[in-house]
Length: 467
Image (cartoon, rainbow, N blue to C red):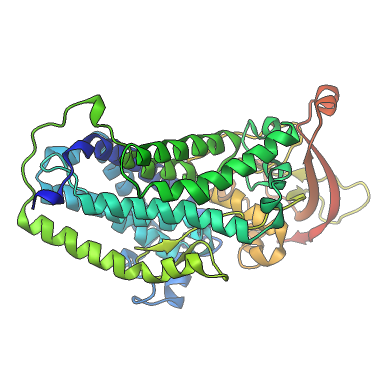
């Protein structure tokens, strides 16, 4: 079938596949380095307990067959190895069927991880990676030109991602409609980056322009993805520029980078180079792609209905394999930044002279003098959940107690998630947690104190607790 492939998009496919493999590498690397403390057999929310509470139908995956920390490590590091293989182009050096199997492997491995990840893996970009990774299986390799149907399915993902995010903002917080959300967002976002202080200090008219540009990019530009070239390429380019702005202004794991990745195959790269000679698509491949397209369109009913619903929800999967999902972010924006500060002491009995030493986290704000660091696309899961805990203790009910228990034991795996352990020689006698209000300092305060943050005590989060 001549209509089945699009020769001119071969370079867009190649760039997309390389970028997606890099995102996979970041995801698997984070899983390999963080899982023992979070979901390991002695983790805060052990994966075996998640498996006991769910079944095959609701959460299928490899760990249904067997779970151990050693097996999880094998899965995660295998995912890293496969991602590296895809980055260097092994998929283009093997037959089409083998390439599809190679792309299916990281999808299956990461699906298995997400199914046992609990709240630590409850972020929208987990589903986005799985949905995108599933479609990548059927995008083909150097043996054939990119299939048109899969290219359009990737655009459908990008459309839902951006349009859904735009609608949830417009329907949600009034500050999006009156263009004032960016007065607060750079300061109160989950994990600021090294430039967030400077973005926050931009003039308010610039913040209003940012908000207006966001509405244009997320509510109008996605429609242009469905138009002919070169308009679709321009739309994708605008999305990439917007995402790079977000990359500079904060840390959102791989969400921005995966959005950029989805925009790459929309662009018509054909003026840059001639496509190589490629064979026609095998009949079996055409049949598989058509069947997958029918499946995705059928599963798209609920996500599409959610887009037009007044009760729109965000970041939800409608099938256990995360094949078609709904997305969105920051339907409401915090006006005040609260942070949970965790401290320990060597004193067995707390008295007025007790000295409390603060634990340092890698990404979330702590020491007011420390400039926020850039971590994305690497995902610091504990730091993100600490942001949610500051919003409401309900977000931390399941895991914060076990976290404190492990601090009282100087648990090696848990301490590896932190930047600084103030008790390297022996565990603390007691640990407490307090909530502070954080705000970015002014230019004058920064020059006078060297502090990027100013913090004020608000309330106790956890009173002094001993082992």
